[in-house]
Length: 139
Ligand SMILES: [Zn+2]
Ligand SMILES: [Zn+2]
Image (cartoon, rainbow, N blue to C red; front, top):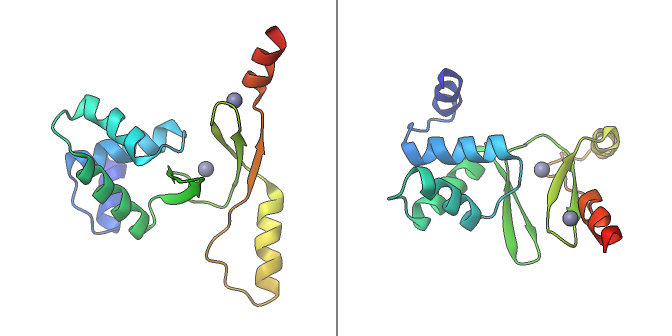
């Protein structure tokens, strides 16, 4: 909690209950939720919270760099991991998994060597996750 206070102070954000709940949910779950998934989860802890509040908090977090957002299809997902990493996306269950990858650093360095200032790095690998693969074998 102390740590969270510092994180928020550093970004000049007031510590409000929705902000704390949303931050904890995204940073601990690693599921790259959409705004409505965040809303559902946070509502269980803060029954009065509105979807508009959830959107405002998420956008604020993205604005100050606490979260990243990305689109898959029409859906915007939020990511608590703000360091460069790649994503494995399951075409069957929709799961989005983080993967650390040394090569991503190399790609960014390659761009920098050529004089680019890198603002954004995203790499998505689409496929069937191990669980879905196993399930399809059982059938
Ligand atoms: Zn899957
Ligand atoms: Zn991620």
